[in-house]
Length: 374
Figure 1 (tube, helix red, strand yellow):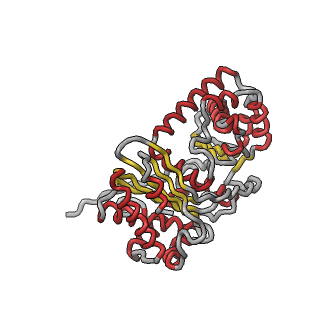
Figure 2 (cartoon, helix red, strand yellow):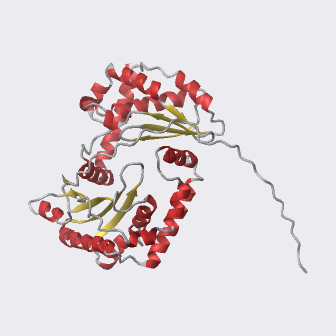
C-alpha cells in the first residue's frame, strides 16, 4: 500500500528593490598631507547623517573608500532614488564640532585597531612597496585629524555634495566614472620591524601586459589560494615551512596585480624564500596542474556569479561597467578559457620588478634575504 502525500506550494514574491549607489569624487589620496584622514572623516559624517534621516533610516549600507572615490551603497525594499536625494538635500555641510570630535575619536580607534592587525599591516606594506605612499594612510592620526576638522572640512563637504553622483542600476543612470589613476609602479622593498619569533613575507606582481584579462588572473589566484591551493601545498603540506598562505588577484579598475604571501617562523625564512621562488618558477614555466586548474575555474565562475545574488551585486556589476571593466557575466565566460591563457603567459616579473614586503624582526640579514625574491 502506497501512502499518497499532497505537497502544497506557494510562490513568495519578494519586492523588487535594486541597490542604489551614491559616489563622491574624492578619496584618501586626495587628502592634503597635513589633513590625512579627511576623506574618511567626511564619509563617516555622511554615513552618520544618512543613517539618521527619516528617508533613509534603516537602509542596509556599505561604504568603500578608494584613492579617488568615496562609494556608498544602499539597499532596502523601499529604497528609491528620490528618497536618497531627499536625504542628501538635508545634510548639513557645517557639522557640529562635538559631533566631529566624536567621529574623529572613533576613526582614531579604528586606525589603532588596523595598525595592530598583522594582516592589514602586511597588505598595506606591500601596497606601499608597489605604489608608494604611507602604509598608515587613509584614516590619519591625532594631528592630521585635528587639522581635518578645520574650516576646510566644510568646503570639502560642499564640493563633494555638489559633485556626487547617484547610481541606479535598474535604470542604467549615472554618468561615466572618471578613469582610475593607474599610479606609478615602484616595485620596491618594505621592511616593517615587529619583534617576536614569527614573520610574514608577501610579494605583489603587476600583471598588466602579462596576463591580459581579469578572469585569468582570478583563476591563477584561486589556483594558488586556500588550504588546497598550490602555494599552500608547496610551502606547508610538502615542505612544512609556513603556518598559512594567501593569494589575491586585484581587479578594481586599476592595474591588475597578484599578491602572494605566507606567515612563518623567522628561523624558516631562508628556506621559505627559496620555496616561494620555486613556486613562482613553476608558474612561469607553465607547469600548472590541469585538474587543479579546472577546479579553480569552477570556483571562480561560481564566486563571481554568486555575487550577483548579493544585495549589492547588481550595483557592483553596474559600477564595473561604468569603470570600463568587464561585467561579471563576461568574467565568468572568460574564466573558462583561462587555462589556455595561463599556459602562454611570460614570466610574472618579465615587465615589472615585483614589490616585496616583510613584517617581523629585522636584523642585518633580512634585507639581503628579502631582496632575493626580487
